[in-house]
Image (cartoon, rainbow, N blue to C red; front, side):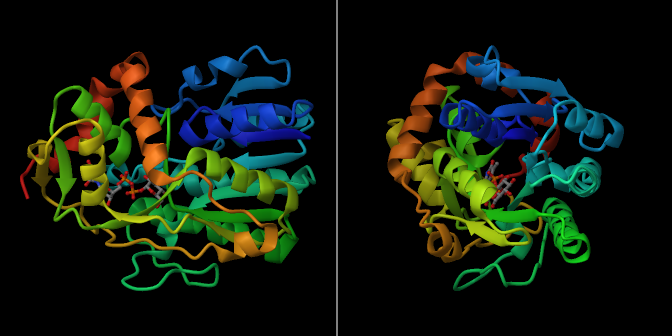
Length: 336
Ligand code: DAU
């Protein structure tokens, strides 16, 4: 297969590219990535000389460049990881979110249709469903996005649905829970807290720390996308989760204990505006249809992730200094 991975230099896209090249040595993977602040070719060092791998810098919002890369490389299918992903940034500055998520996905759908590609997998989020007090969202649940990020993702997902219904464009949409693992840009809860603690800084826990998220390790998510790319029927939607729900305070305590630090390192700060209290998705459809199951135990995955950040300060330290993080972190300087 000749595969285009858009957003392949980011955290999840780069894990997926390495996974695919290792599992299918005869596949060709073209990584089409704009290299925003979150894109990092360091993530792909181990495959950069692989003759089946190619990097092309470009933006999915640039239709001409996108179509050129698809036609020149005889692309057969697309997996779209390209997105602005950080909720706090979307609260400060939604513009790029709307452009990349909505217009970028629109261009990918148009290209999938125009070049008769066999499949487009749109990697989306459980945040489109909004917050849920009890129970879990299924693939049939309606959307109720609460942040500009979630609304932009929901817009793109609606477009995917419309393209399948209207044109039979072979697109599959996923709604995934929170990712964690190595090489995650140090702005999200887990890598931000780990790297702060390595630097001897406190960790800013929003509000009462009792918001609940469901967590999946990169390796389990890659296996799920692999299955959906090869086996899911066009037009289908799949939730990808683990059932591993944790309050932020629980994760914080796990990280502190693993790093031998005390709860005095927690700095309660004011809450995120519109903060979703709980995400929870039912992913039984994925297990039922394809026998997929999460394999990585959270405590083990978290321990490995902490070890990786301890051993790879060269990777994250340059990303943590400077304006990358400072501009949106300003929202959270007030104490709770
Ligand atoms: O649910 C899937 C989504 O998970 C993805 O679609 C998003 O792209 C991804 O960013 C993530 O969104 P969250 O807002 O849940 O992730 P984040 O790591 O930013 O925050 C996780 C929880 O931790 C959330 O309740 C806010 C809280 N938090 C986060 C940060 C960065 C803190 O208490 N302090 C912090 O400094």
